[in-house]
Image (cartoon, rainbow, N blue to C red):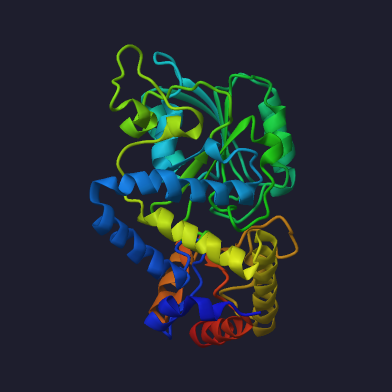
Length: 389
């Protein structure tokens, strides 16, 4: 089945463009245009009172959608924000001042966390243990072993690693291996949310989960979220006034108050348009009866078709043996990563020919999404042959 008719605005904007960066900027379905306009119209109609609608209708709807997709028992544990870096900073601000934060993580985390952590290390504000992602076959065992040794304040790991596409097959085992009840455990789910079927319910009482709308949720910027394990009276020092919205009129003398549930991790004023788009996309998928499982099956079928056609063409610059995560590996996300010293040069050659990919160091990434179908794979391979043969 082709879902292309639902993405005509983006596709028609540049018909010759072959966009295979769905892991980075996913195209938005057409329903998001009306949602974006509705946000503007609500601002015009309600002015200052628009926030009543945002917090009474828009945010709760978005919370319910995210909770449904992740099988969270309580949608109120979710806080929304404009980007994940803001959540990273609030999480880091949970820990006592005066001693380094003891962190267990991997060497494959996304820039937002990796860069910030390195900066803290420069000032001796963090003591970090990094578990190498490769070899991937033993990663779960090595992560579990490192976690079980304890002594960490923060355990931060990705569900799907951004520079390879490898999907950690057993999040539950890693989370449950952490012996320190006070340790904060965070799963970066950005490359997994609405891509890989994820039942976070069994560990939702122990671990945070962070993701957003820019990639596979097809909702663009400004719709990131954090699930906060319930029952914890956490008080991040990096806090905004929305984290205690209910005390604005009554005052907040004494200790700084925090709202219950996920709201204690809210920041400050934000543009709600991303949440309007997010809800439109989720409502659209529900209306079509399209589940995360169906999306996953669709994308993995496209990936296999791509590699089959690529194998037949025998392009020396781009061979299946260069895949960081082989196509036979079921634990992979929605992009394929080729390891090649020519990654940057290939990316630029492809971009000049209207094929959008991206690269990270020596890794060239091809992302696949709902707006692709089998004829797109044929067009991609034909164009690759013209460029690289």
